[in-house]
Every structure is written in C-alpha cells, then in structure tokens.
Length: 266
Image (cartoon, rainbow, N blue to C red; front, side):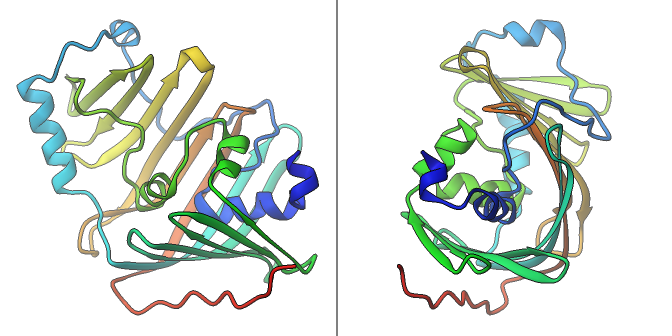
C-alpha cells in the first residue's frame, strides 16, 4: 500500500532525518554501549499507584528536561539492518516548539529529501524523483507499528521520554542509578536516570502487540540552557527490527530558523 503512495527509498530516508526511527525491514539489532538493567521482578510489575520517591525522581527528571523555542542542528545518522547492512546519512534539522519540524537529508553531500512536519501534516519533497507527497501521521503508525503524533516526534528529537505514564510508576535505586518504571494498559516503560537525574536510557515493552522501543542517550552537552544528549542509539523491534545511531552537532537553541519548502503538489 505505502509503496504505491510513496517512493520507498526516499521516504525511508525522510524518516531517518525526521526522528531516526525508520527503515523497518531487518531482522538484527546491534548492541548499545550500555545496556538497560531491568530486574526480573520488574518485568511483571503491576501498577499500584505512585510512591513518594518515584514522584520525587520524576519531578527531578522533568526539571532538567531540555526545552526550546527554536532548535537547529546537523545530524549524522547510521542505520544498521540485516537486509541492507549499514547506511550512512547526513541531515539538517530545524524545529519550532509545538509547531514545526523541518529536515533536509541526503548522502555524500547530495540532498535527496526535504520534510516539513506540522501537528496535522507530514509533507515530503523527494528532490531526486522530483515528487511531492502530503500525508497525515498515519504514515508513521503504518511504518512503525507505534502510535506517533507531532509531540512524540518532538520529544524523541529533544531527548525526552515518550510513552511513559507517570500516573502509575514505581522507583528503584540501582547502585548510583535511579530506575523509574510505569505500567499502563499492558505497556511497561522503564527509564534509567543518572545520579544527576539525566535520562540514560528508555525501554518500552508492549508484550501484547509484540513491539519494543529502546533508546540510549550519551554525550550530554552542559553548555546549553539544559543539558542535551548529542548522541543517541534507537532500537525498534516492530514491525521489523532496526538500530539507528544519531550524532548531533552544531546545535543552536533559540536562534532564528527558517523552513524553506516552496513547492507545488503534483
């Protein structure tokens, strides 16, 4: 179905630039540099309300979350799959909080795709094929097998946790780390926080739908308004597993940004 609507190679490249969660056509995962620790008891956690310690830990996490009015950065993306091996991309990312996400992505210095996302639309300009597409967020749901909206993409790019339900969570101390686990509607989501309450990893497990999402966060830049993770590793196992490494550089916050996307739909 999607193949008839969108040029597949270009659209996957667009998703790579958008949020690093793309190209779901493999059967292999590669290992992040640190692994998520989930004790056996946690895998059968039953929600029983929020404890004082978990609420305090979560409040510390929120207090240190990266926020912005405008954002821009250069990205290097490395995608590994069993079917295609390793592919490398570069991208330029620009965002305006709660209203726009803009990406230009390509390979070997050649722009292949330009994407402009708003809260109610996903617009794609395939510059190589000279084609234009306009979709809604169902396109992400079809490809990822996960519920995705504008806020989800924005949170992923900003390095904030997604699919976490703080109304039902528990906390645990693991050496110098803090573990927060929520369980809602059959979905378990576990956050690992550093001693500074910065997000180190997130793992969502939806056993009922056989889908997982794991993100590891590295290289926090303390020079920005709030520390920002400039290196990420994402692993998604639905519909088909893939791992994406994302490296942010030349990050600018709250400076003027433009979203050039002047094109006529075919």
